[in-house]
Amino acid sequence: MKSVYIITMLITAMFMLTLPLCAKNSLNNLPVSALPLTETEQTVSSETVKLKLSQTGEIITISAEDYIFGVVAAEMPALYENEALKAQAVAAYTYYINKKEAYAAEEFDITDDYTQDQSFITALAAREKWGAGADEYENKIRSAVKSVLGKRVLYNGAPANTVYHAKSFGVTENCAEVWGSELAYLTTVDSSWDKLEKNYLSEKVVTAAELQQALAQVAIIQNLNENCITDIVRTQAGTVKTLNVAGVSISGADFRKLLSLRSANFEVAFSSGSYTFTTKGYGHSLGMSQYGAHYLAMQGKSYKEILQHYYKGCVVE
Image 1: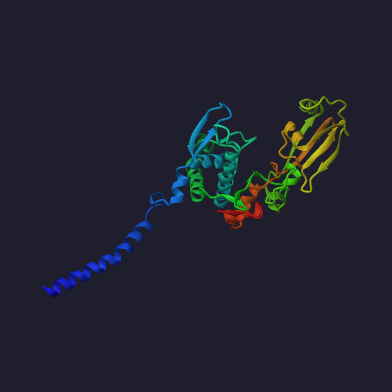
Image 2 (image 1 turned 90 degrees about the vertical axis):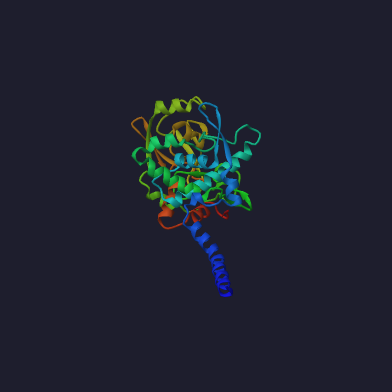
């Protein structure tokens, strides 16, 4: 009987030793969504966003994950590399945090108006846009968003103003030259690979009558001719800061908006009564270039490396 008792105790001890290992292996085999959440993940997963819809003025409440998915789906092509999509998700979330603070006195956290905040699209609208590739693209973007949800770009411990644009002029802009105020992490960095994108250059032809009509929103301009656009002042990166049209001074940003140019880095030529504007890049060229992020991801760069390239001196946490 004594020997049976000893054997029983040994078997029990061996079972107790192997139990934690079995449990660990069973967790490793579970899908990510089934694993228990950490305290931080629980906080992030329960976060909600009060989003104001610009077309209706309605304020809806959605999860932070669904909001960031909608921003990435609206702002970046789903064909882009996974690490670029992750970089976009982190930049969008950090941008949202800043906007939420700016809108602290409002009933909403952020709007879907891309002219003042960032774009957003519902999953249903995104799927309609993607067509036959809807399942693939939705799963791809949701996976990218989930993998970095809650991560932020920080400068000196505070969320950075993570503005971004479609593609630069070959270098990004210095914030001080464009906005007139300095942010150390929004400065000129190399993005020469943007010039490889097929639509890096674009042209728009505007007749003298069309130009006069567009500029009528800011001034009544007469006598438009071959030499009426003068005194073009540029930033070091190439953005037009100011120009003179028939004696009227206009900012490059306003001029771009009035003519719906792809960027404020442009050259102008006159022929047969029309002006041809040749534009470089797409967007304001501040912060992260989305095409640049895609290119760097293709070269094997991680989303953290991409973000730290475009937001100098920042960390991702």
